Image 1 (cartoon, one colour):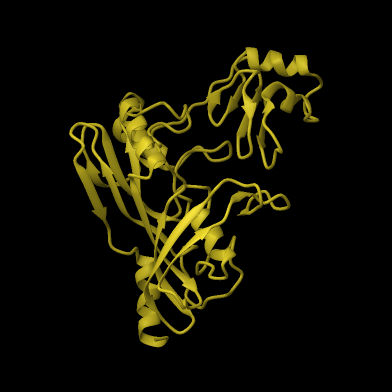
Image 2 (image 1 turned 90 degrees about the vertical axis):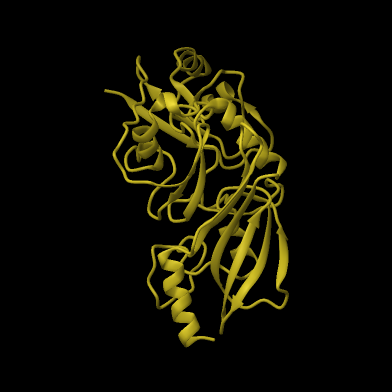
Length: 308
């Protein structure tokens, strides 16, 4: 019989050694017990085997298995996926709503990772982000649909991650939000961290990680706006948090928006609809754009006919 413990680090004033952090948790009896678990490779941080000296940071996920053998198995699954672009190093997939990007401790089936493991095999995906996130360079929330980049090898993974880090890769989203805007364009610059009182949520928190979102109004209706948004950073739930923060929450976002809406959709009306990045082999610039998903189209049709 084994036990698993997961610790989502919500807020740390400064980095703390992994063994020191875990020894403070009531599940463990001593620092020596923790160090023994780490030595036996039974402690993972963000899906990677960790050392005692690792400095724990806010938003880290720590997974501890109290057993002699720690063996995580993520099974390939024959789940249909829409490939929008592909070369020998990179694939771009149109992820549907109601699919999480990678497995978690509680959900190891039905994810995008299960699907791409079936399509490409573990040997055909990068392993930089560990056993739980093969090929995953960036992520989309479960109910945010749209374009996501997959790396088929570690060189491609580092190449794409560097483009995201240096902001040469462009990621644009579509969203329908509550309220109207006086200015047609704008920038939200507000730091984001885990909500200290509600750990399932993120929030604008002083001292959090820098987060910048640019928006442009495409179309306005009576009390609603259709936006294009561009990420300059990539924090968890960034667009959803930022739009709620400025008083324009995304329609049907049950986590960050309590305003009722009469048209039912699969959660938030948010889609990753445009990607621009360079290819690994010859640095060609790839521009991809997809149509609004069914939920956005349905609500736009309603707003155009009833609310303008």
